[in-house]
Image (cartoon, rainbow, N blue to C red):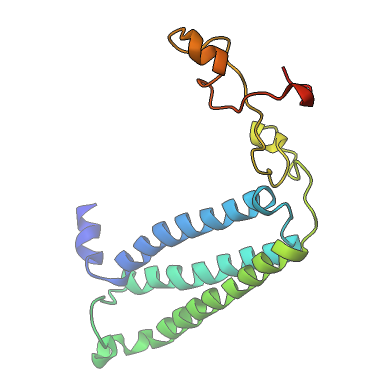
Length: 185
């Protein structure tokens, strides 16, 4: 890898690789998590059509931006220069740099779709059921969104250490004392 490192050192290739790893790996994962957990957080689902539009446009513009950076780096376009086009050597790369800039602007503009879908769906999205994804994990058995104190307190058999005073007052569990009139025992 040393010969390649010498060739691409201080070029746009390094910038492209860094942003592919951090932006694509992190931002796309965060958006996927928001789409997945949105029903659990707000009790509604986001618009699926606009979610797909957001994903595909982001994917296209992301690759248009950062893959073009890889190409520029592979031909030796330097980073850390205020104006690399001051040198005639790089004049033929101007169209690629312009394309990369348009893709970056498109990628940022695409996030408006996400923001509008997010806030619109918070108030007007279809009401989500308990398990809108058909997942078989425990968190989807709770209502969406879970209400205040939605988890049911589970009383242990005996307090840690066998302290009978705490057992009689049920102070060890963190649960409120049961109310006999609610049918709890």
